[in-house]
Length: 507
Ligand code: BES
Ligand code: ZN
Ligand code: ZN
Image (cartoon, rainbow, N blue to C red):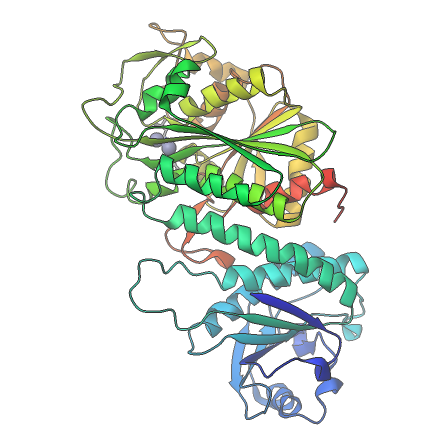
């Protein structure tokens, strides 16, 4: 998808299939309507003002067909009030996504133009350059995310796909800069979503390893991949245990981007390419979407792709423990005891609580081998986090208030909500085993997201650490907001926003 920024209507490069015009409440145009004075668009706007039911409320989209040399369709897009900033940015993101989703149902929509929402003097407010930056970003992300469709396994060709976006804007410099970051973000998010959406018989530990290896095409990324033999020499007994039942052997991948003399941030992503639950098998209704259980690992592949594309001067490392939780005569059993890399023995109380097992060995590897200044792990870890916070909000756990505030800030920038839950120490007792040093889960499901996080905390020693449980937001059967059905790429954009300030890019 190519993005062009032009400063006047005359500057529009070519004719387009649709022109999106943004409005605030009471049909207040968020663009300079006079620039269209001698075109059919002006008449269409007049018509809308006179007869339409369109108000300019959030998420209102009306498509009109016009007989113009330039545009075939005009899309009237409502963005609501501009007064509550954060809500307005969200309205821009979701409004543009909705407009694009509607346009893509029509045949042949490839090139779109839009006037970037600019100050609405009638509402008595003007946008600062910082606000203008956020508007550009929300607009690009809305278009990029709205245009994504996963059609790999659908025989018929997609009706339309957006090839070019032409933005008519006053702030050319800001637009160009945001377009560069947004193009990278949209591309990397597509990689994440394709990986998560693809069938689990194709997306195996081996194939995710190959996706990670393809990052070597960026100069300056180092990718180390390790097989089961290495995992054994590392005494990663928990990763080995989870992988036992599968035909596809586990892998352990380390991706390094070392472009700064500053300290190192290590990310760890849960990479369960399919979670059948193991011998404690998941029932119908819970098992069908479990290809999404590598969304943590996928979001880190996206992150490394974006950071390398933008050549950010930072030092980050991504660790991907990759494994399939399958059923066979070799599967780990409930009641088995395995020894972790750290040396703590673990009773497997439930084979479906496998994510924390592979993360435990990965965390211990990071702590003992990589000298991290901070660790952030990302995992579709517990259904309990979705019960607690719903499917929009990721659960955040951390032993560091600094990390929490950095991640909260990043989440505000990305519009991917998260909420901190407590590492309530009393619940550690739930993980006490009569048979080993610890068990992987308690019989009582209450507070399940917290006990999972407490299990992980045992392996992080005292290093500043944050854990994002994305079981709710990573994937949606029904489709949600700007994302449509399937993988959302959450929390990829939050992680990128978390990295930008370290690279000296303040937003
Ligand atoms: N992969 C699941 C968690 C999950 C649930 C991800 C829904 C995405 C959507 C995880 O491995 C799991 O099965 N957790 C169990 C833990 C339980 C056995 C303590 C759960 O949440 O039920
Ligand atoms: Zn599971
Ligand atoms: Zn899982």
